[in-house]
Length: 182
Image (cartoon, rainbow, N blue to C red; front, side, top):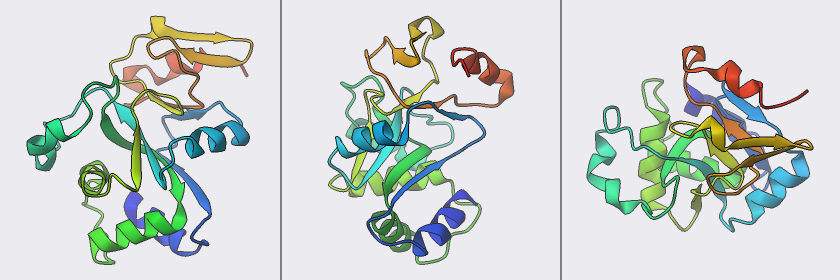
């Protein structure tokens, strides 16, 4: 259903409008708009996704054959669909092209976006160093530092503005909130 809502929304925007779309229930945005935008622009791509450490072959059978097409030299090589930022026109164009204007709610957004990425690397970047987006799956909390209102992930020595604490509450989402002082 996420894809359908995203597609409907970007159709209502101007092509160069910037959209930040998240899972929301397990995402913390700690950077201000200026930093988020600056870091997004540094990728020099129309669309940026967070990267993750694992491939998830158990639910992503399509991409199992493409596992080595990702940059495995990076700490977060695989596209994670939980956070995307990009130009509305580019998102609309790709969703329209790959869904034939109809997005079934049963379509797994991660599988679809990975397929789209592999065929459109000229338009899409993966934040494979957690510069803007940190996906926390298989990262260690001992690598998190929060000082002077700045969150640093020591694993890549970056200050991501968006933290995607993947997984339901039972995986400890509230623990991540303890690192951020309101």
